[in-house]
Image 1 (cartoon, rainbow, N blue to C red):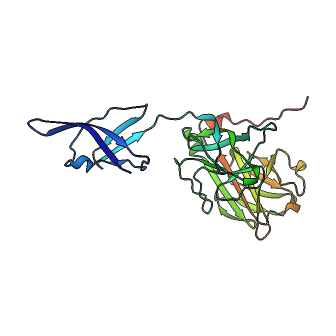
Image 2 (cartoon, rainbow, N blue to C red):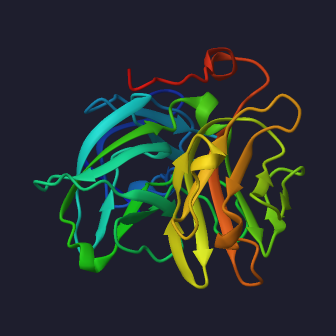
Length: 292
């Protein structure tokens, strides 16, 4: 984490020494910029200018004596093919919401998303967007990784996702957790009621759900979302999702025999909450398409 200078050329004016040089970065870059205070044994730099290169914006931070590099803003929705090595792949941009993950095999396997820190089972992928599994705190800006089960032998996947450049989505990403039917983190109104079906009330409305993951006696399973509670089947790891309810806010409904409120069972929900105003709020539509 350092800078090196080359092609140095020095001149002198009545007020200061002037130095021109090329600067090269090494293979790593600290989040708050590279220090140039001691570059080429110079005294404290009083001022200067930099030229941009390769599409990056380079800025002198005179207060902290650092050189900062800013990449162009990414697109808000992006599709890319990701190479997976030793079961792990990395997205080009930090993700705010994963829409779809599938491989390039003849069957075009789709992978259900589970939170980072959980062990994937067949057909699932653990996605690390920067959300801490223990606290639900979202650290923005880190590179997104995808971790697959070794037995799935994944070497390449196509990923569609919303990048963190879409600020309204990024600012409203939430991960919630219940354990044995009790709220661990999430919205203050997050509650679980055992019944037929079991109901998880989110305490707020949602515009999109990335994943619902259930700890089934120590095995983490990505639950398949359905739109009607009457279709939720026992032992099928299914969940009915109602993203907007006028009086009780969003709800997730589970088959009572799945026993998601067992003593050692937990449920993780990663979603985008509905803001009170703005594009997401005004463009949310719930609709159904019949087979006819």
